[in-house]
Image (tube, rainbow, N blue to C red; front, side, top):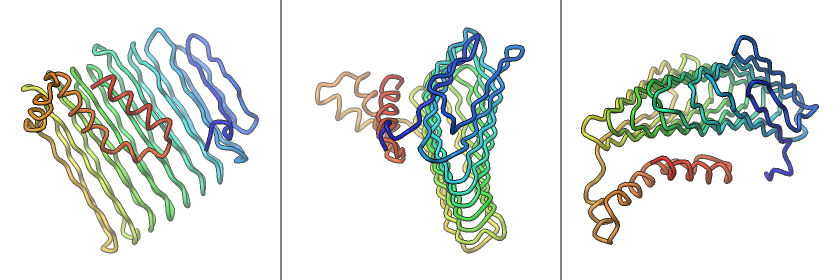
Length: 306
């Protein structure tokens, strides 16, 4: 769907909050109290898809508490392409009513010296789909946690995360709970660790007793570029029903030197050969992004930060 077929809104958060192209079919309410931002986004009607751009221009730490609600048969695409130079603490609670779709794109840059936390708890009703894509360059301390509750039949989650880091202690926690039958989840996480970075990913899939026809796939991969860099990948499955198709995999290691050697033999310098290798590694799951524009932006992000 082209941008002309969308309602496009912008929320710009600095010392004050500005709205651009606010629509009557969405209720947006943000306010600042004691350097904390409290926000609400309610998609009220469904005549068009909604694209909301969330932008941080604050010159201090970004603290956000956000409530998101999607009405039946609605579509929300939320983009956050902000830089968080002074740190951040973001907490989001989302509710999706039946037959709704939520696409959430985060392509963020952080300063090495900052501390950043992100928590998102989202509940999906009948026939809902949550598409979640996150790209980050890490920071000194980083904690990311997403909890997905697939509460009703045919609820679906698809997500992909990319972490590229030189100096971070990063904890990434994804919990997907299948709480009704015929729900689906598909998660992929990729990371590149350099310098003294210590990156952890824990992905847990829980399938309840009455959740037959569950389909779940989880894969996590890491690339260790330097001697003291660390990666820990911990996939978990807790399955309480036999009528499911569930799989998980995790792998980390150093680059394939034969590939690097091949690129160098073609006259490509070492640094450029490594960059090409890393771009290919991180770009493996970009085809999961259904939006061509955001797929291109994600590739540019990887190229600029790897």
